[in-house]
Image (cartoon, rainbow, N blue to C red):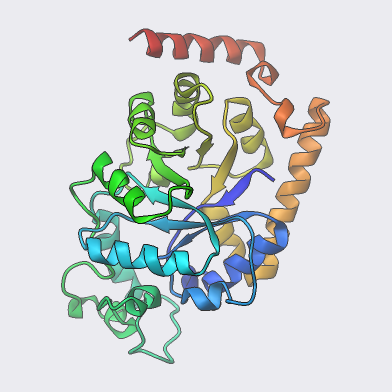
Length: 317
């Protein structure tokens, strides 16, 4: 199943079990989960019990100005021995969306039992003074950015620094690569895989659609590192097209949250199992037995010609 659940925050807004339900649903369906360590509303020991080894988990990180928080988070996460890779968001050098969303917490269906508990328990566990639920419900009481400050000075040197903090065999995935030039820079910086993404259109709403950027990036990268794609993936047909265009898999952002809101972990598992069955049926419709048999030649001939023309023009320029 070439699908990962993309890193998203505040899962408790979708269902009361929050990220606990996400991990359970993903594990039951055999799908990878990118766990947003910084902004998880559930402590990692609840999400990944110490005596239960889950599969295909990736540790998601933001590059914060509070570099000590990032380093402490990496150390604490790696001690769990649950994560097979680190996925770093590379296209979020500001808090515009966060600032605009904060007022909505005053009307959200939040659990009000423990108002003075830290809302980002993983940050509190490593000694960082993060925000409480009471503060989230009254944003006027929050000073600065709750839960860390996204660095406005993002650079590939940050990738090199993170690599220095982890074992040499720990893969680093760069999420938020929109151009072939950035893909090459990522590889030169030591990145082991990339995610073509426009952040779901949430950060820069005139960004190129990820699926349009994908063919050029796939052509330039040409097998040097695995490629994934997110932003707008909804159906098995979207997955087929992404695989035909050169990805190793896709990431889902909103659909898992919708499923959680409909019924927690069981609903998420059902959604993912339905998607898996739909993907199998799509492959049968194409007369292939494996996702590895998909390629550009499976697309409609005029589409192939158009894509090849665009790719060649971009490479020539």
